[in-house]
Image (cartoon, rainbow, N blue to C red; front, side):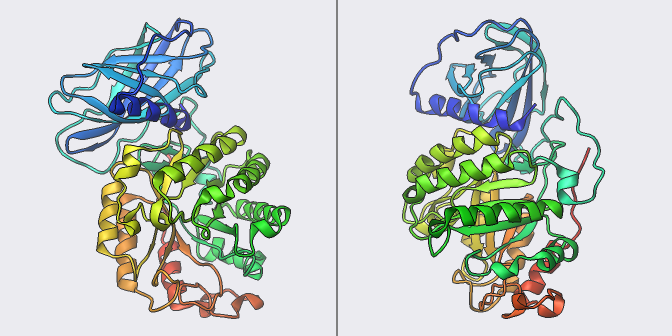
Length: 476
């Protein structure tokens, strides 16, 4: 079953359970003549756990669904996505979120949630869909021992063929979010490593056939982030031209078997709502044009700043449905408060996101760091947040947050070692010859035709050495 369908529905559900707002009533949808429910524990920590629930419709087509089960004593839903949930005593009810309510015969729908326990930790074994008892399975029993590594999600109903190519896209195919992980077409957690462009308006010559061949073949990058500034002489000056440039680079990444992050690079002003209509237009065009591709990831707001998490949610709740309408399978990255610091740079934490997450599937939250500026307290927040949120480091640098200054290899190494241990994907800033120490190439490189190691800065040498390390992409 698709992980994307599963994540959004239960999010709304758990929020109702936590806040007590609203109640679940019997659905007006027809009863399921036959059904299967698969319940899988995906993550565990002290006093809590995460789970995914997949519904398979074995009867007539459904226009809506409500899943029910009974928890053991002391277990409660604390956060959910891709559904609307409520809990009365030990009885849990999760209703579709509307957009994922229609399930064809043989089709699936899914949702996920986080839960807590203070007594019994047994998984439920009996489920109903629209009041009809279902067959199914349960996988993974919560224990009192915390662990970071989620149980892999179930293999999709249609098992993908083994890869015939060796590039990241050929092996991993269409990505999706499962639990707190980025997963490949086989439902297995993976980590992508790559690098970002600089502003397309300033460094257009850096992204040509030779440089992109070097990135794919020598650096062996998994992902290339296309940083399209919105202001700062970017998109707003020529929407058709910048949209075409982004699409062209998506194609170039696809030809080389790399994933492409389409980055709506909001920076100034820091409130993404200022460019809401531009974002709707841009993502409608780009997602419609690239919907058939498997290599595209959408980043809807680079570094929100000077705004609350609720303002970011308001923006995301209007942009994400536009992308999903055109490209429902795509992974979408959402910026966080304080220049995508999970709120740390504003004196907050990821707790505000955990308490009020987005109600969509296939969503990841971004974290950005610069190694010389963001040290142990930021690493501690990432370590904590990664237990409960799917994170993607869509920008990081080896230097200070200005992009300049001394290259801090010790902190950079500590950061990448942490991300490797948590299997969090990361993208470095920047694949350019900007006159700043965070750039990968020496100034003037992009005016020539050679992008070899002799042209690399100290930062570029370090980043290349970490990106080109052999990937471990499971296919079973």
